[in-house]
Length: 468
Image (cartoon, rainbow, N blue to C red):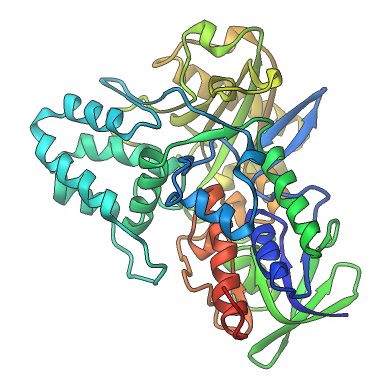
């Protein structure tokens, strides 16, 4: 069977690309290995509760037409009302000697920073102006260290750490740093356009995208894994599925990741999907606590709280399975107008070492399960240095590791933010094959959808002389 475009992965980038192409009557099929949609941003049911995976907040929540989310929804012709967004009331950035609040009003964060760092008031004002004026053009640029750029402008390591902490947790594949362009994009997303949560969580967004995809006539195949990408010389011409059947196409878009996509092509050396050396790949350990009361009743009223119990930022791998001193707390019940099911949840995320979790998994199920509980407790105890201790009120707990993430997404070593080698033009050096999603370079939920739209527009619709 032949298609205009095949899309590997029904994550947010794949769904957005599928909708965009189908709107222009392209014959499209999305191929998803698992039964659920969403990829890194999905959900599951455990002991009678549904839990989100990936979604801590939907960034770019402003209703302004110029906001990134508004632009994405217009491109897909999805109504904002379908998302039932509830805004954050406030969120936090916290170190032992520093606490900063922010909300969907940018002026609050600006005033908090100026009050905490009065000697840098003028430099901060100049930086805010520069970031507000920044307009990404989608063109590839050489890597520049955000840490170095911020330090040059602000001259204060502690202030730079405070700015990097939330940005790193929302999209950096690098330790204690991020690309300068990515920093500017994510700063706008978090602090200028604000965050919200769909009532019903990620399921609400996925349902809206699936409904739109079906209305456009695209084909969505779940439980349909791609075993390899078929090449004809230097061009991609189709795929072979896990069941041995083949599909042909004129264009192929992959959200599998850079290394993973090259491995499907038989390139890139050892099979990256099954045992590549972790190096310094960044992944996470996430614990979902169900409490016997709301977090706000304990004094934890932030929608999201980024924290570091050390004096300096430690967004980095430890030689241990986790780095508990630095993390993010998400309390979905602290957004406005949320469903009762999430009212008592606390989600905690910390950096994890993929190699150590691979070793633990190899040591047997009992040791692996015990390690998950031990490191979850260790992370909660560290956070209790800066926040109310919710652990005595935990009535149910689920924990997932880099091994869980790798299993359900196929991302090497559970790399949530992918390879440091981003390809903004989507090019992997193979004709008619382009990356979408994390390794293309647009990060976060809104960024993933933007990635699918941008690459579909540029490399399929515009290349064929269609409207985009």
